[in-house]
Image (cartoon, rainbow, N blue to C red; front, top):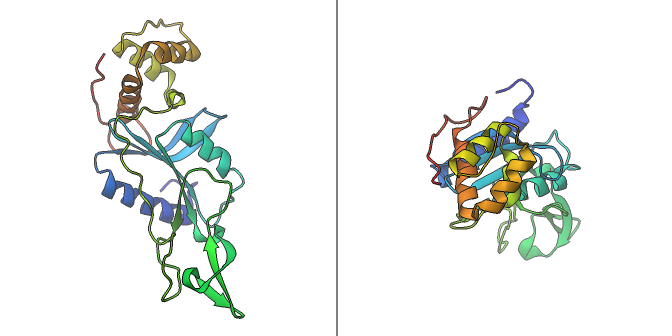
Length: 226
């Protein structure tokens, strides 16, 4: 575990990784990846399959949620799915009825709900049932894993996940004109203009699956069809 990462964060991250490996066994998991969509942001981890990206932001009990809405927007602009894995301390108390209550206090029933203002899927750690015995349903009990995004293109801003060298290589593989002096905006614009959504999605995923990273699963080298 990197020195800058707390044990509180690592505990949640490990649970997230275990769930992703269970549901997307072919995906490559990469920790700490930068994306410039909506301003510079670092995504805690991404799971990259051949044509699907899942991005996850982890918030432990030692963190704050003030930056989370912007971080989720950045992830939604670069991935098929954006997930916030948050500690239960961030849940908000709300009055409810007995059939939905998590607990009772002074004759009134309460539940702890997800914090508002966050666009994307929320996983609450630890994954457990919080409802009182006899309650009909606990919406936070299980992490809802996203369905595979078959034949759905990545947002075009997902190109912001790539390094300049990767953009240049992707242009070559997809036969898009680019020179050594081409800027990143030049190459991004050309790729968006000349390539289909399927080509970009598979190409971005291939670049990330093959990237040499400090903390990630082993590289997976795949061919990108032109």
